[in-house]
Structure formats: C-alpha cells, structure tokens
Length: 462
Image 1 (cartoon, rainbow, N blue to C red):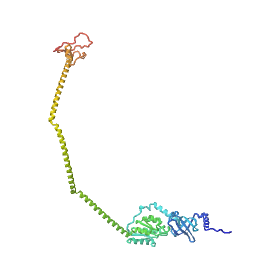
Image 2 (cartoon, one colour):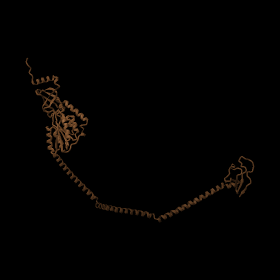
Image 3 (cartoon, rainbow, N blue to C red):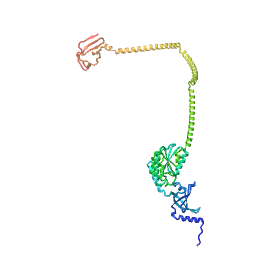
Image 4 (cartoon, helix red, strand yellow):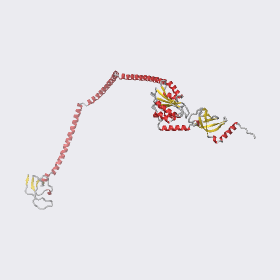
C-alpha cells in the first residue's frame, strides 16, 4: 500500500482537526514557569510556559489579558487555564490563555482579602485616623532588616535629600516564620525612640509568600497603636499589603517612602526663595496700588478743598446773578405792560364817570319807583275800600244792630250750645249797645218748649 503524500497545509489541518477532536484539550490547566514574556502595544501577552523538560508557546489576547489581576513577570510560576490549538502559519501548537493565576497562592490571597475586609470593617483603615507628617523631621526610625537592600535605599535617599536628618534603625526580620512578631517588636521599640518623629516600615519586593509578614493582623494593629505616624514602603508598586492600608501614608517603594518623609532641602530652599520672591513682588504691587490709591484720594481732596469749591461757588454766583438780573428785567417789563393795561382800564373806571352814570341810573330808578309806587298805592287803596265794605257787611256789630246778641261764659268764650252751661253759671250777653250779665237758672235745648223764664234778675252795662 502506497503512503499518501500531504501538503504542509494538509498536514497542519490534519493535526489541527486531530487536536480539535480531543475535548480534554479544549479546557486544560497547565502549570509552569514564565519566560520570554512580551507585552506589545496591542495589549496581547506572549510568553513561553516551561518546566525542566519541555516548553510551550502561549498567547493571552487583549480581552483576556485585561482580566489578569497581577503583572506577569519572567520567572513566576503560574497556572494557565486555556485551550490547545494549532498556529497554522508556523505549524506549531500553542496554548490560548483565558485565565492566569500565580501558582500556589490562591489560599494565601484569600486569607489576605479576608483580613482586609475584617480590619476595614473595624475602621482600622479609615482616612480620618491617618496622622500627618512633619515638614522636615529631625529624627526618623527605620523598621526593616539590617542586611536588606531597603535600608541602603532609604539611607541613600535621606543622605541626598536631607543630610541633617538623624536616621535610627529598629531591626526586624521581614521574611519567613516568626517575622511578624519581630516586626511588631521593632515597631514598639521605634515608637519609644527619644526625639523620633516618623517611623519608616520598609522592605524590598518579593512573592506573596515573602510579603506575608506584612499581611499580618498583629502588625497592622501595632502600626495603628504607635504614637508616631508610620510610612510604609513595602515591595513593588503593584504590591498592596495590609500594613500599607494600616499605615498613615503609603509609598510604592522604600526609596519613595524615604522621599515622602524627607523632602529635598534644595527644593525647600528653592521653594522658600520663590515664595520670598513672590512675597516681595506682592509687596511691591501692594505698595504701588496703595500709592496709586493715595494719589487718587489726594486728587479728590484737591477737588474738594475749600479754595477749589469757593472758586466754583463764585462762578456759580456770577451765573445766578446774571440769571437774576435778566429775570428781574423781564419781570419789570411784564409789570410795566400790566400797569399800562391797568391804567387804561382805571381811566375808564374813574369815580367821576362812575358817579355820573350812577346818578343817571338813580334818576331813572327813582322815576320808575315813583310810578310803581303810585300804581301800587292806587291798587292797594281800591282793594282796601273793597275789603272794608266786605268787613262792614260781615261785622258782628251789624248783626247786633239787627237785634241779635252774643253770649259769653265766665271765661269770655262764645256760647253756641246750651249744653255748654249749667244752672248757676254766670254769662254775659253782648248787644248792639252794651252788655247784659245774667245767671243761668235752667238750660234748655232746641227740643224744650215753654215760656219759662231763663234768667234771673240781671243788669245791663252800657
């Protein structure tokens, strides 16, 4: 049987399909050491995963690379979670990474996160508990290993930036079993150093196992219990320990912690010089502004001075005097015209003219009055004659002359009804000539008949 000849593409496709037919290769976990790490600008991560006898190419595309919670570095032992596929252009198989975890640190990381949540719940990391740093401390205590690079870094930075600061070491073991206890002891010792103002807690980089003494609850509480502010500078910039969260201030590295505590004297001098310059410039501007204000006020005072005001008032007086003269002349002219007009009217209203006219009017009125009086007298006389004749005709005396009489009671009231008197009343009868007094004996009505005598004896008065 003759063997089939494959092209390279066909062979690669055959291998690809063979791998694809193996479901156990679609979701694998592979542990190994990182090497040949490459992070181009595309955001993908390329590296080789190896052990003592073999190596395999790996790629984490950008979407998966962004989910990696730490920064991969060469030499790290990691666990890759992904799938095995063929890269046909180069005819090699490789791992397509979906997740990347540090090897053997899952339990430690979980313990650290649990401790962080516990202490945060107690308020141990609250910002209001953080203590401020002095501007330029005289003495700083460093808590770290005697032989570590962190101490040399701190010393170098301090000497360069602020050589006048006194540096004191409180030694501690910063790695391995029992290291946390030595750190707590060193913190207590540093807090008691006479004249100290700041504590530096520093250590170089390392794995999560190396940094575990700084993820210790006792260390975090010791930091918060010191009287002095604590600045932490532990590991690399990406490392954040419980001690960093508990410290009053955190720096990315030991050198950065030293820079935070010891500001550059040269920079301070330059800042003081710049502030002095700004102060001098500000004073000059202030003086110039005050001088300008004084000049403006002096100008205003000059304008408000009595001499200046008197000159202005004199000018105003002259102006008003001219207006007054003009007004008076105009008023005199108006009054002259009014006087001339009034003189003409007065001439027409002279007393002689008015008296003559009044006399003529009096004569006319007298004549009218005489005529009206004569006419009125004549009418009144005629009316009086008529009324006299009427009165004479209606006069009671005319009635009495015809034989009638008028009877009055004792009060002088006319008696018209016999019922108005009783026997014994005195009455008076008026006749044409005189009167007769009588006494009533028996009053009679119109129905009474008889010729009995009505009156007793009486007398007549002329």
